[in-house]
Image 1 (tube, rainbow, N blue to C red):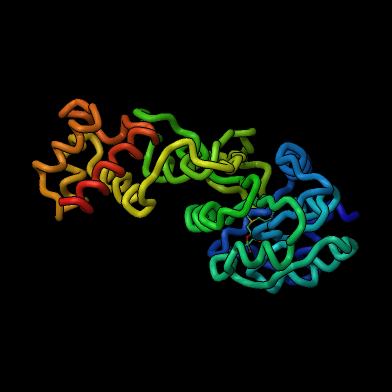
Image 2: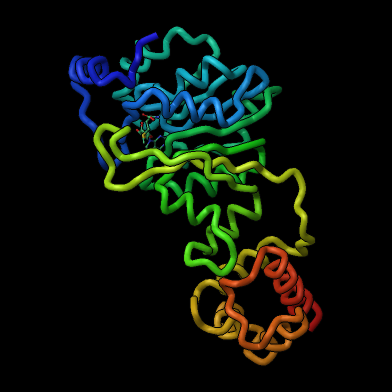
Length: 289
Ligand code: SAM
């Protein structure tokens, strides 16, 4: 197997194929072998797993996943990588590459089609310019056991944040609604070529099998969350009133009181159970008034 993380191997390989990194495509390739090894190992990929990888690049993580998984389906946007991937991962009969933009895919249909019958998992060193849309699509597909991704450390901290902290955001609630995140380890910038400006971290999102909260209407729940964070450091009542103009400020105040929350509570201190309670109260009021 070609050691694609060895810079003495990688640089001539890229040069031979006239490959230049595309910043616009978020191309920062791994040059430290322990990183893809550890991602594949700690993500729990084994022979029962069907893994969707996003952005294989020249294949360092793909190799480690294909060594362990039942099957790997890798989606890569940049067709220039095809001749290189043929050399670096061509030997794996349990690997299929889909040449397309991952954001144009129907993820659950792709997983069913390519990885049906296996335990579905997602694993990737993500292109950072589209971290949020990719994570959103992976979680909303509601088809994975776990999603393990390398992201900017600051994003990993937001994904795993606790209520009331500076990192806690609507994106935190979105991720923790679908999954239980755990930051596995940090990856310094010098592990990539070219070096990104930021430290990275690998985060594992264990997808919830069932929701521990009653949610009457998912759309109202996420609208409540977005409205609650839209005016940070302002009273929740103001954010919710702006997000639900059809209710009016007084009714919003009553909903907050109904949920047993203090009048001057701030949205960013609420946990998911409290957001669920608020959203359900809003939903009932809108549908019964
Ligand atoms: N997995 C490789 C590694 O760890 O060295 C490459 C990771 S690099 C950070 C991100 C990869 O995602 C690149 O190969 C890039 O071409 C690919 N990519 C960028 N945008 C994409 C998209 N919309 N759909 C699929 N792949 C994409």
